[in-house]
Length: 310
Image (cartoon, rainbow, N blue to C red; front, top):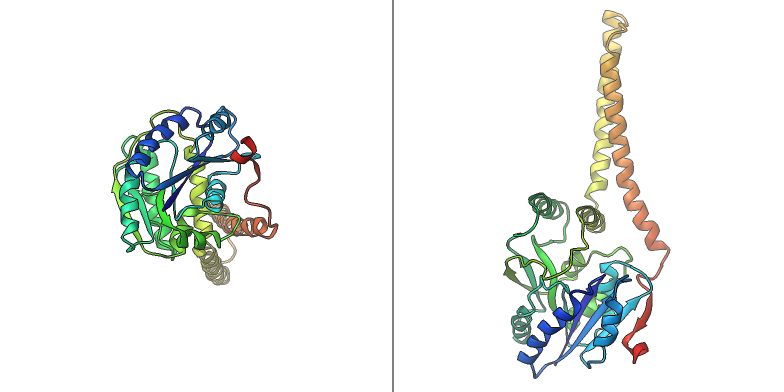
């Protein structure tokens, strides 16, 4: 039995060796199982690649280095394509995903009852309150407007069977949201809960703004409800406009044409204009994703692997 673990890295020179030491402890406990750790260097500008070159001298370490920063989603997809294990896992290098949980994940999959063992956080200790609030709000919204369930607090940290990984690789879309894809392909998943663990070293690369944009990506990728909302707004304001026109005509015929009321008219014009821009923006989001898909650009470009370093 062979386990592949995919570890995306972007400027993680402080964490890689610490992570590898912790993983060695797990690998010793599962000594009858072969491991391959696939590190994805996502265009790092620090010494991440140098450290990976050194670690790749160990037979259980492989790495893929991109030509530039393509994003974590591209790193996940590349790792899934390069993985050769019977079971394939995904972890963050910052040790917020407890390596010890891999043992329970492996034992669960060996029982053949589940196709995937995934993790979710039940607490957000150490996070800014405003970030936690918007995270919970996001999960409520996405699950209301999407047919694909996104589990609240779900992490990328999981272990999957080869069959499930092969199904995920069939989803070749350019605009990727892995948490949604993992759910969309189906298969039976067991969820393990754990409390939030803070980073051992380094700083998170996910700012509030990046997380906000990422959440918009996921909504556009797995729901067409925003387009429906834009259509409803259009129908609603057509009805309102018709009612206002009838009201103005009747008022003019009965009371004449007063010149008062221009402030309220300006406010109405600004409001309707704002709604129009909002709807146009929603349409633009979907159109831009379609534009990126039809160009058929590669999801990532590999510059170097451990074979080039060998």
